[in-house]
Length: 290
Image (cartoon, rainbow, N blue to C red; front, side, top):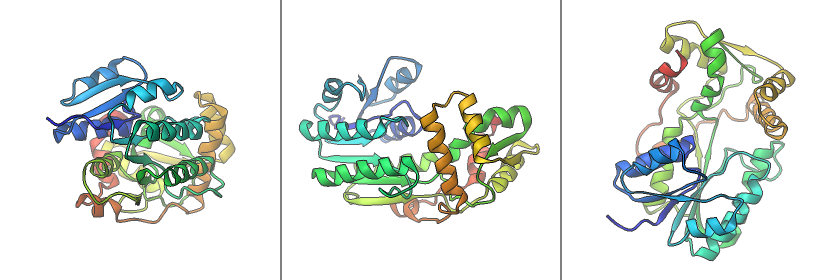
């Protein structure tokens, strides 16, 4: 087996864990960065070719250790008010450590002038990487299909889910396909300097998603449109911090304006396979909504 030269940050999250599994399945060794030892990190450690390193984005010395000997890094942090600063600091540390290529998970329509704070911070980090002289690949996915798992409780208990998005169509995408694009970008030539807008194969409204969930679950699931303020209060009540709740409201306003409906060919172009559609997702994840 070749030496480990790939670092996965955010390795215990949905996309990072999926990326780790895909690399392991291909026999590609990798180093997974985790903040602590727990069941998730133990699962990663059990994967073939996995090397676990404990580090925290807030501790530059630990990041330096995590990056020792690394040539390519997958950059993903938790959504937080400090995300831009933490990712920017990571880039500086990566340069000093001799990293050659960063594959950054960004967001569709990242732009410095966006009214959406998440899109502004992703754009700022992208610009930092561009100016650093590092090789880069930016992955800009749309709303995740697996984001529907955030509505699991009301779907299970009420057969309903709620959001402030109206009838706007969104080219929602499966994180398994995002991870595949990331894996290829980290391991195959030809992706340096590329920016991939990553979407599913079609744009769907939330009522259409509810209809597909209903079919997969064999019971009626209803989408209920609510006001942005109602959605904000619901997010705060379940424990989201104010900054993140406000950011998600900005995200959903962006979706509601119809700004996330375009369908790209990035997944097909990079992987050679069509992206998973929502019906596929609903069938695969049906047991989690029972």
